[in-house]
Image 1 (cartoon, rainbow, N blue to C red):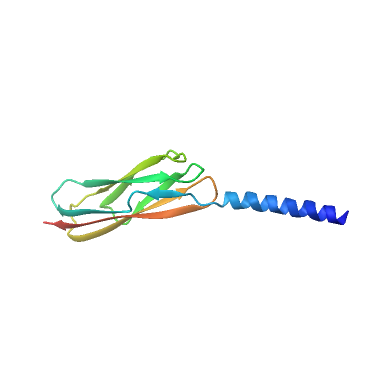
Image 2 (cartoon, rainbow, N blue to C red):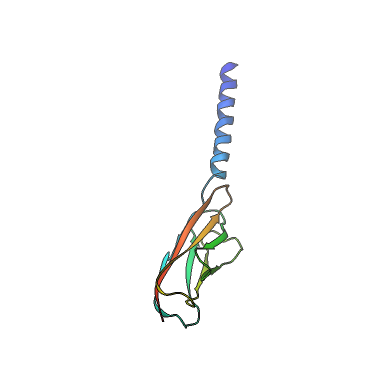
Length: 132
């Protein structure tokens, strides 16, 4: 009897561990590129932009929860809709050179979440040189 109870208890603990492990899984994504160089941009130019492509390489949908930038001169636009496994989404990053000068190194920090409890942070970087 004790042996049967132990086996049932062990099986129950393994099942609980499996569920907890699955709910803690990190989202799996891949980017075509995480760095973009605008090259030389005139200070008087209109804002410039690029797109980063994120592909969901996991088995569960993922969503971009937020995109924070390191300055007010850049911003990111992205879909709030979940990205299904195998599908891709574009993240537009715009940079306004007005008021900037010299070498620029800016970052957009994406926070991405899957169906589990864990989220990941992915930095996207833009570079360039702003001239008068």
